[in-house]
Image (cartoon, rainbow, N blue to C red):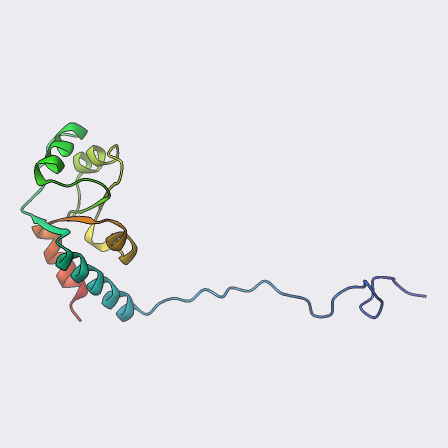
Length: 134
């Protein structure tokens, strides 16, 4: 008689059913760099990109960084880019909602487009230009 779950029978098994596959795609580096250049240009034209000499946070105090952001007139989601951010800056910024502190190598298109305000140190701007120069 045989098995009742054979593919030949009604309500039986599936012949060559779906197999799990990985359809992910690695975007080319040049295309990623072009997209980041475009996003930074858009943020600059919108007036959301500000270049700061240095952030000057010596001690890990959220109040000090919040005061700096208030003096610059920055509110809401903000991306803060500093070349090799020190522990004081990272610790000060982690308790401010909507603030993300990153290294120039970690800047991505999503963060630039998601955050209306972008604060970049002079040194980090040089590193970004170096990374994005074709």
